[in-house]
Length: 199
Image (cartoon, rainbow, N blue to C red; front, top):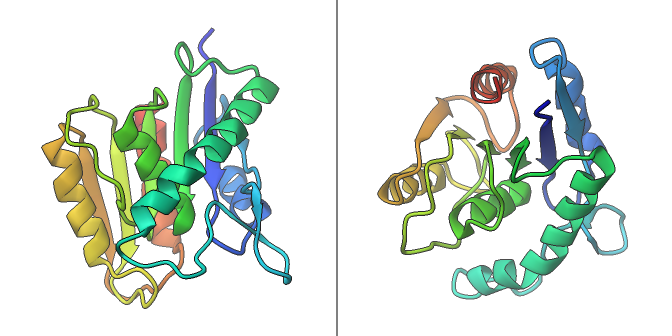
């Protein structure tokens, strides 16, 4: 029997627990799906929380390299979750749901083709790395508030264009009044999306 696993990827300075609630909200809609919300591997400063890569001294120019350097630890984290859940991504259905920095890592994993994914949801993210060759069509949902002061909503617009150029089915949901957050509208749209593509 094919297993279904959704892995949540949190934002910088946060923890897996902050996104784990989404699994509870979606459980009824996705009754045969397992959810996991690991912490990112790097500690975030002295105030607690975790990060996938450091923001210290980050620029538009060096961001892609930061992400590339974060790939080994990211992949180890995902592999550990898959083993814990008894999921084989090459045979089962694996989806990434990210927020902010977690979305950046999810989209990087998508375009690099390192993981066989059934679906990707990226809340308030950006595509900061870009592969120049098609990686196969993976249903992808980009959700972004148009009042986001942290990552401009245009980043998701640009990500959609780049993903489509790679042959990836990418759709965008805008929230005209939302900032850098996950709204109820976004939760509902993402739940519908996952229910469809993990069926």
